[in-house]
Length: 71
Image 1: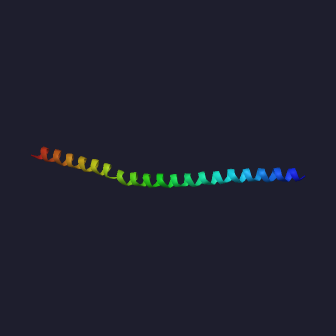
Image 2: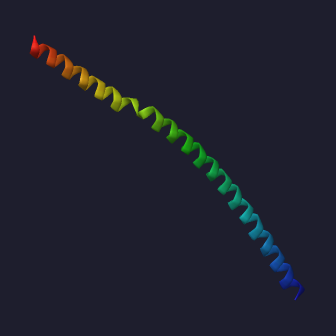
């Protein structure tokens, strides 16, 4: 009986060690996700000028065409 209890204690120690490893990996994954979130927010903020520039170029081209047509 003592051997069985001792074996269970060793098995529990191994399970605890594996669980600690999983928890450490989870912390690493959370920090990676937070880093990716920051990067995505930065990219999304930097993306809005592109359509605006396209619209302004289109309006400028239309205005130039209209001026050329009226002269």
